[in-house]
Image (cartoon, rainbow, N blue to C red; front, side, top):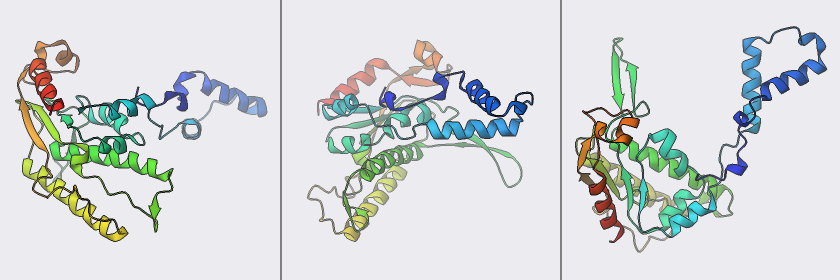
Length: 271
């Protein structure tokens, strides 16, 4: 697991904790023992105890940072965005370590949306509208997760100038250089939108550098080169493989052809 789990205290490891808490309170107040706790009081107690004991920004396992430093290709995915991919990337210092590596950083797009990238909203006229994240929104979300981990890392360091970090803001391509998707993927990919996201980040980086007095980087990419390369990979119906079926894939859904994906990643890793 990417996090140092010894620093995380989950209440679920002790399923009797609620009874212990209630027992302690009953001992201090015998009249309360006969009175069943109200739902509101119980809800409040659970929230307080969870907040006090739950670690919200664990450090990464050192072996993860070591693996990143020795990698010749870094791959994100496949998986549910918020519960499978981001928890590994938001850990403090992970993004910073990835930025240091001049290797391909590859995002594998899913072949179809799940409940984390598609949802329902109500329009102004009261009709239900299906909303979906496109590739640009997914990339922006991943970059934000990396940024948050970097900020947590910088909070522990005396690396500031007039209250601002003197480290250049990473470009989008410092985090993701390639997007691979299975042919027939449901995820909408607009390359122009991705380019605009990269250009916006580059402008932000330049403005930040000028505001804190950072010299222009000699390896700064021209705006026309700071873009994510999008590549299509051969695919197969999701219901033709065990993993596709396990993920809820149907015959209309597409999943990466394993051989084609491995060949592509090996080629990227060797460049």
